[in-house]
Length: 242
Image (cartoon, rainbow, N blue to C red; front, side, top):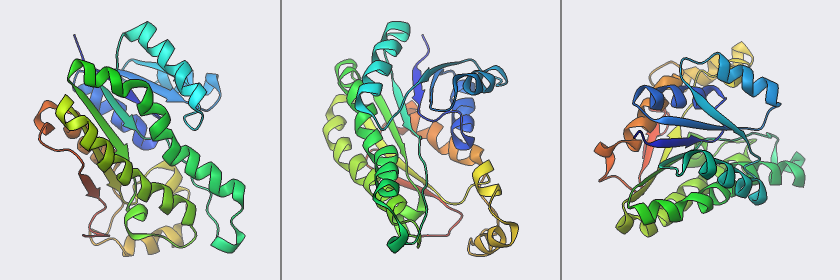
């Protein structure tokens, strides 16, 4: 029986690559979506892998409870969680509104509690689980205009380290992956001259590929990564080293 992987925001650029890689490695794929249902169905139909898709507002605990009920009814369990869903609402601090702050914190950080709280107990009872939380280089180094995003993404690794200590004796590992600038649709939409300035700041002089992040996630989801927990894997082309 194949292991079951739940990828939040699996319909995005990095999320799609993660789903594809895990499917290639034999996982059964579940993805959440927040966009209109027809758009999510169109995404699922054009992939090279089979994915079960479920609507979920990861920033809302009740919505995640509904997700749990549906997923367990259909699949019985979840073995791997990839907390990938995230948004940005960028602005200089003095122009940032409370709504911009709350939206980013709830989607990027509260979501980890909301999702993991549904499935962590089942993982500990079965003696196996892999939780991989997607953070960001800007959660490590900070970024002007992203006080909300940098705060949330820094919090992601705090969550990882604490939950890793609770899961370690039960066979559940919890790790963070912190991507740098990746060539997703969102990044490619940045004005070319600004994007080129970003690339100049990356020692390898290119954007990362979604598939490179997916490969890192897939390793952490594997049996080979059983000795790694509470770690933060930086995948940023050397933009930030620590």
